[in-house]
Image (spheres, rainbow, N blue to C red):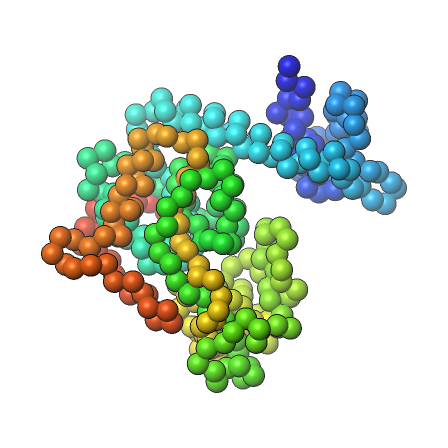
Length: 312
């Protein structure tokens, strides 16, 4: 027996996210008294309290924490199932690729060119995400495949293949105490102010909130913080800033990811093309890895304009 409807889960999650009944009601476009009654009905049906309420505070109980975690996964699964059903019946379905602006390590043109060679290639729509919601695009069915950065993006519920591995670079102002170093270690960055990325739960930064690399660079320029990013997101380093390889930081990996439950040929074809794009053409020799500390080479392969990709 299903004890909660998807609409009720949406109500609960809105309150759990906002921890404020008024803001949650506005987000859902319903009256606050109706939302309060709906939450009480859910608690009565489940036999547990989900929220601790006072005149000034709304908090989650342990039962509420558990429902928030599993309820979000359940809603994502329902959404993905609906999207998959609709798209499976559409012979003209396009493939949707999500990434953040500039978050392709220079590989996107080659991937699209390789996919264009597939006999079953479809039109590719490129979707641009926020700093940390690409995983939600895939789990919720809003995108079919995505370019994600490990270990920064959450891969729970996703299958993935690594396309590129690179070092991480600390970006500091030109007048910073470390600016003259050839490289730095993580221990040398202790005590520095790092950004809080908008939409990234549990981020370890203590500095101002930023939403993209452009904002980050601006805050570094005025001396409010430093940043540590995958090399491909840093270069070219803007004037007035210095990029320093972090010698003992774990490498960052760019991965192609998709919903673990998605077994459609549409997705499998794109994944195969992306993996093939990592390999050199016959007779060109072995793949050359980018040495640590070196800038990645960015080239647009012949035929990239045949991909039919559209951005939105």
